[in-house]
Image (cartoon, rainbow, N blue to C red; front, top):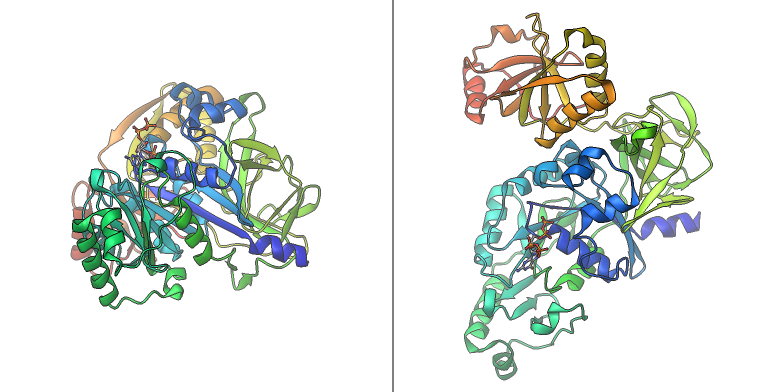
Length: 530
Ligand code: G4P
């Protein structure tokens, strides 16, 4: 038992979120370098090829040279066991990206210092905020021309409604970037050409009163600006409150340059210091203590057909409590059955390895013969808890899909239902209209291509796809309301999901506001609670 506690206490499980190109991959790679999980810079960058080499991903993924799935990387640093959850972006952005955040205990938000908040950062932040998980901000690319740090922090506060606390402060930017000032240690971490390599960087302790040394380090002009900035920040009266950080209300902000390996190690140390081991999770009225010796986990992602020959699926689960042991029998709550989890795997940096044990905070992937659904609970036989379900996230891209061959109705319906149950797409239909077309909603455009590909390859059905102009979906919260009685813009469509819930599809946020204004009492929700 003491061992289990020790193992769990050293776990830190977080996701890195960013808009594409802000530097997520580069930062992940540097963190792995510090952890000794990889030896060479560039190992993560070549992610498409590296991953394809170790696993048999879907054909489409290979053709496109991209990764559809989000993965997990585990490494050790200073006695901590760190799990980084990857949240894919670009066109492979999907609901999985959101669901991955359900498995994280905290998030690191990478922001490009020249660009500030970008659309994908916004979307991912919303999900983190919904769970009140701590969010740490890494403002990247200070070696390039950047926006004023004050501006960037104000943008974060205004847009996200959180407090910010700069842990360090940049000294210049672009070709004038001289380093950062560590506000707690009150010392300067100087930036120079050496940092382009992977050397550990030694901070130069220097008081702000030591004008002479400072001038030789960063020049008189920047020294003056720094002294003014520090005075301003210290005088602004913002207290650092770790409680607020842990409640997701205050984001500690770090400035640096991932590419130059600058500011990464101090960030990692400070981050590890401030974050907590896995926290208790809600399961109905019960709170599951991560430190019990009893294993419990929930499925947050299902990866279909990694090996086409076997039509297998991998269910990824986040361990919430206790210790997982490979050959032990557990209980699958939703299936009501005792099960052994076959081929439990973990990703250690780029290698997939079969594991014998894992602890609360860890993520494991297990072979799924088609019994698991997103949100399912697996636990010790004596426990029988049921973790709260994973919400359904609002899709933003919609298409009407129908089969080309009218004879293939059965295969079409089976295929589209199964793919929807895996959580890759959401499906809707127009009630009481007799329209057979199925409306598919996704959060990333690639999911529509995956759907077409899979219907053809796995179910032998060719489909026609028609883009639809909707961009916003809302679940109707009012019980017993007949959507036909609502006063809506002519381009708003009433649909139902396959559980029979009523939803409205809108072409813009403007139409949502119109509906709310014209229909007092109408309650609309952005996420569907399970
Ligand atoms: P992502 O995962 O968030 O999409 O971003 P990624 O790390 O792939 O970084 C996007 C681009 O930004 C890369 O350049 C990367 O080298 C660069 N970058 C990351 N951190 C920094 C930084 O601190 N300073 C500067 N100047 N650039 C940075 P690329 O040209 O798109 O790719 P590559 O050819 O360098 O691999």
